[in-house]
Length: 303
Image 1: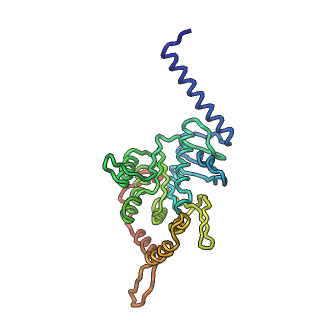
Image 2: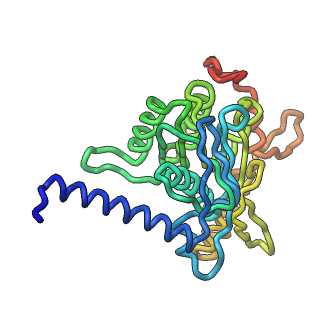
């Protein structure tokens, strides 16, 4: 029996679809995936979610699962702080991947999952330049961020990793602060925002649908232990020097960096004639608290 080209294409498409569904089923059975609950109410709730790739790549130790919850009424934006290597990027990528898997019809690696429909998933992750177009890393970052801010809706899922890091500290912090405000007041998209700008945690007192989270870390004998667990609250340290030590940076460089850090973290103030030291970070946070509220109206207040 001879088949026409159209019939061959239809058969190939059906076989391809069966292959994908069989792959989904096999992975779900072998890895203990669960069927996500899908509605249309703007909820993203994942209990003990796992990264579908990293949990298979880790051999020496088990993957640490984490809970995720975002919704449009009370917890629209999650600002996630913590040191490098602790797992911030893994966590936000995991959330985006599980949402994508649920929308493709796959089961997801979690104890329980509810992934309501989103219109698009926007991400700004990683740092790279575009030499062919003459664009710096920061220009690429801002171009992608602009695309998100101009096209995301209140039904979108947005994942932003270290936005603003490609320029000076004050410029980057100012941009990150304003971007978060815009996502909260004007866009309304469910958002994960991982950052080293710990000052952004002050926004939780200004924006009612923003919550702070951090990656748990324990200090012991001047060493740090990454627990890879997302907990509520903001981090107050980046542990950059500790990470540099773990990477093998020479001890002399580490000790010199510590001395410079101590100097930078302290600001000498003597208004009454007596020398005293006040944390530079506390001074910066106090200035941020004095910033006037954004003139933008919160389009989603009271929903």
